[in-house]
Amino acid sequence: MPVKIRTMKSSDKDEIMAILRSTPAFVAEDVAIAEEVIDAYLGDPRESGYHFYVAEDEGHVVAYISYGATPLTRGTWDIYWLATAPNQRGKGIGSTLLKFAEADIKNGGGRMVLIETAANPTYELARRLYQTHGYEIISTVPDFYDPGDAKLTFRKYL
Amino acid sequence: MPVKIRTMKSSDKDEIMAILRSTPAFVAEDVAIAEEVIDAYLGDPRESGYHFYVAEDEGHVVAYISYGATPLTRGTWDIYWLATAPNQRGKGIGSTLLKFAEADIKNGGGRMVLIETAANPTYELARRLYQTHGYEIISTVPDFYDPGDAKLTFRKYL
Image (cartoon, rainbow over all chains, first blue to last red; front, side, top):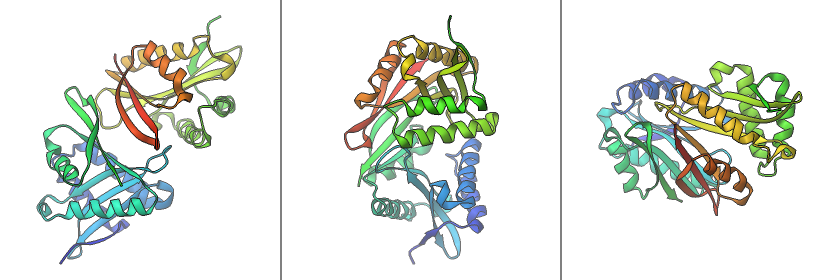
């Protein structure tokens, strides 16, 4: 049975927070900012400018993705968050959500997708996922997150 | 008489909006986003995370700068907006505000400043200002704002 993709609703928040907290790559500040964004979306989805979709399996949220049109641009979109529950990895759920998001962005008039991520080893799997899906690193900002920890920007033209 | 630099207050908003609207580089959407950020700051300066300073000359606001610590980083700061009234240019007011901001950021624990700007000709003066002050272009995202209009990121270590 493939997972079901649907928009996020308020009752998903606890399961999403559990996914974020159990993801080793996310430190406390990452989780806090992810929660702020989730709350902004749940408070007023349209006004927030964010798009949130979850992957549901047997009645549980197993992954989610969030993205939005990049302010001040014409047709550039950012994928902000993509997280899969640690015990659900390796099943292609992240790929399924990423492909869903790309199709939705293209449908909404997007021509280019950007994903920012850290160069440190905890994001190795994420970087591999983006490269598998045709994303290229087009920008590196050394020492961005911390001295020695660069920010990478991945890009894909749709 | 040098200009006076002080924090922005609510009564400055009209003059700042006039500066933004009279700056050819800013399109309507830029002005709308600048206003949102100003309102967020005036509503709750501390909670907004933004720092706003104006340059005052003979009782009028002639320029302003806005900056803040970059979320999820340790010691990286972004300068978001720097605008001088068109009839006040060439007097070094932008330089004065930029140097003020750098000193304030360093004082607040910042180690690196980033400024994002467009590659299109309307931002030529801004780019020259940053380069004069020791900023280097460390990242270019082609087609970011529009097909053919790249985003440049300027960096300076403090």
